[in-house]
Amino acid sequence: MTVLSPEVEEFLRGPQLAALATVRPDGRPHVTAVWYEYNGHDFTIGTFRGTQKLQNVERKGFAALSIYTCQMPYKQVIVQGAASAGSPLDSVWRERVAIRYLGEAAGKGYARDTADWDAVAIHVRPLKWTTEGFDAA
Image (tube, rainbow, N blue to C red):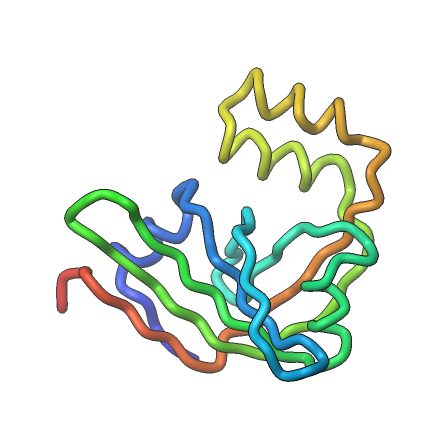
């Protein structure tokens, strides 16, 4: 298991967008921006049933994430790993993640307004890590 520096752990807890890369049936890449949550072991990404990314994960069982800043100093964490489609995401998880990205009021509003959407989890278990822009210590 990879041991991450406290700086990288803190970065992953922040509200950075991630680019999720999966592989389409014809071998072409599919990349989409996603919200995520990292629990110290794996990443959870919310999506809706029938999306291309979910179909790709169900078929291939592999995904990559690039989590990065858009302002200098640039930082990036790239994760390649085993991916699986999970169970439906409950309203508690969806609200917690929405608040992380949108703030308290807007996050609660988003979770309330989308409560009837059929959201499911994609789990990515990291197998390979690459970090850039972090202190070496």
